[in-house]
Length: 443
Ligand code: ATP
Ligand code: MG
Image (cartoon, rainbow, N blue to C red; front, side):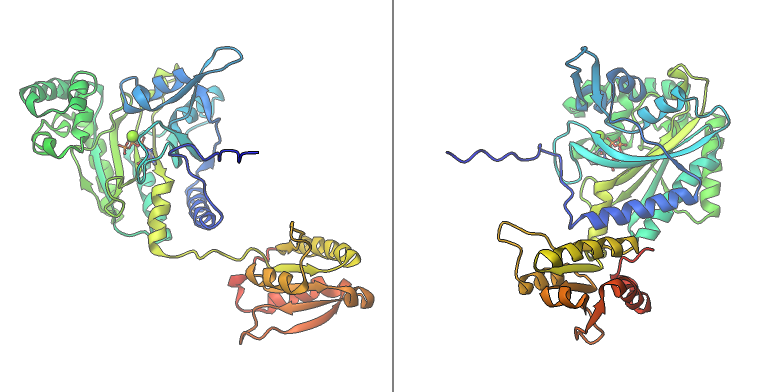
């Protein structure tokens, strides 16, 4: 028989392997703790939604809806479905569907995989994870400031430095319309400098041209009419209010007049947290206000603001910090030989787990059950604080050998402990151990 062809993951979709999982866990736990400390509640929405939801929530003339969505027909009934490219649309749909704001505004967060058909490169994948927050029903700059300060706390807690905050206001639809007319006129005057992408967007989404990364267009877009100069009194007051809170809380930012969300339903505050340490994919968190969106969904006008973080990019930064060595697999590794010893090992392992310990029980491989020596090697490699060893002699005496794998001076003390006392013995040893870092004990 010829060897079957290997199946590999889809391009741009990554595995998170056990060596990296602790870093992800650290990031997720830290973020969730912080979100909770600001009163945000978790919401989980489906990965698949009706295609129409995204076209409406994100805007028909955006990168995402124009070319990045994974859409397909349900083979059972022909429904047009899409793998979610971002989280806000689903959250807003759920908020309306379940009337979550009937008793007042809500602070929500979500996390999970998003899908976009992009050209895979560093920091840009076809499946990537986002952590996001949405505050629904709040209108003032205070909640904008809260979201931003929540991010700052996260960077601090994770030890991420060298990340800066860029801030802008994109006003309201009327203000953008007035700016748009002048912007298009300006861009038309410089049509010779526009690249194909910009030409295509000239009349559909000219604001997004300001966002271009094309070096040849930088001088031209820098001198383009600035949306900030078109803001009316209320939009300006909102921006000033936000700046004031940030200033009072020593949050540093730069106003970037070219920062936009090219989405129809975004308004006023937009912000990005950016680092120079990830090459051209340096935005680790992007957020903004989208007050008009919920009404376009048929809901009662409800202001909202949120952000989304690109988890892969943040994990990449965390790797640079060199922390979070892979933790031990377990507290106790069960070594056993013989049928009766195995039976005892199973019973003891369950009791140890009842007591809150993480226990790995040695299991057979195609190479066999393994000699004591090879099992002890596995015990060592597992990082366990203790090996509990049961062989013929131990079965005969109803006592297990309990070996401390990581003694103070590297010595490996061993004790003979009656089966029924093993749990107490190990727990005592671990609780008495001042160096708790290497144990998982969680009673
Ligand atoms: P860009 O201009 O880089 O394409 P975007 O405007 O499409 O960004 P958002 O939709 O605002 O990005 O997504 C929020 C965050 O999610 C981004 O700042 C980034 O950190 C992350 N992100 C977006 N797309 C990807 C992707 N394809 N792979 C990895 N992370 C991504
Ligand atoms: Mg994009």
